[in-house]
Length: 382
Image 1 (spheres, rainbow, N blue to C red):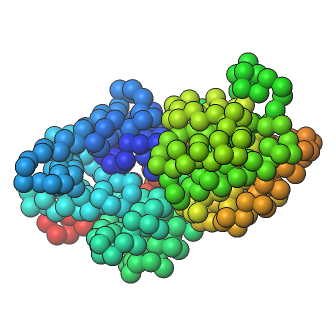
Image 2 (cartoon, helix red, strand yellow; image 1 turned 120 degrees about the horizontal axis):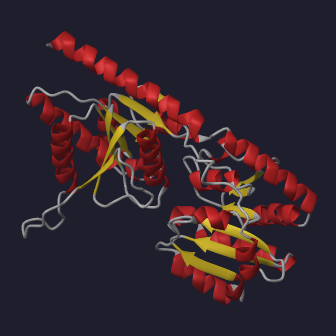
Image 3 (cartoon, rainbow, N blue to C red; image 1 turned 120 degrees about the vertical axis):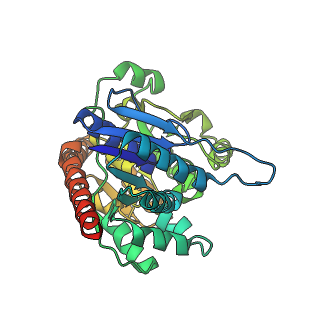
């Protein structure tokens, strides 16, 4: 089967999931074509993987170049030239709407290709709610040949927010245990925590929804009770504010702002605790990757997080903004080595439920079903 994958090529969860999915499919013999404006950050070479860049011409007439139109045109060309069987688009806007346009263009040429839309979170909970975009989001979802969501929470939120006629299948995010596992990086840990300090960690795009200031506040309280270090991985609009807070609190020297990192699995391996105090998380892929490296999670109870982080077993859940509770939970774990060791084992055990080998076959079955249904529909209308 030849599959086209459309995603955002960034460090965000939707782009990471789409890239990991495509690479796993290619290893199973599928021909995978990535269609996006730049090469996805985690994309590695494989003979079955092809990358097609969406180029957006600029003209004086356009104050904002029409990326969606360029994307749809690129989809059409890639489908025709490579005889794709299926499009799988990640994130509703503008990928699903562009896929609909491409499908309709191809129909006029006597070509037929179905598309699957996977919803990841802010395309529903943030962007999708904007009155400027919500009609297009709802239309694109309803016009998809199949729709999936990464958590039960996101599925219910989609039905609550929009008038959706399609059945939404929940296929959770997955983690590659062969990459994300606790490796021996003691030399690395010794460099960052030479006196045996506990290491806390946060990974995100540093947007408002991630509540970066809460990460710093939690660490300040932990730091007062336990010798500790905080590793901040990623970059974004709230990074500078977090750095300024850390200086004001006089804890900056015990925080490392490491920016965007490709080998995040190695950093997980030296961490004792992962902090994720987000306003909302449709799933929490970074938390799952941390758990695969045997790192317990201190998180909020929003969105899909309770579906992966089991309160009192793999970590703790708190209400959004409850810094006191999150800090208290973190301290209780870090002060009890036996309890921390058990939580680390529990985290790994839970992560294995979301292992690649359990989730990819679900996508494969969906692909086969959608392609077969579309072929049957084409024969009826022929």
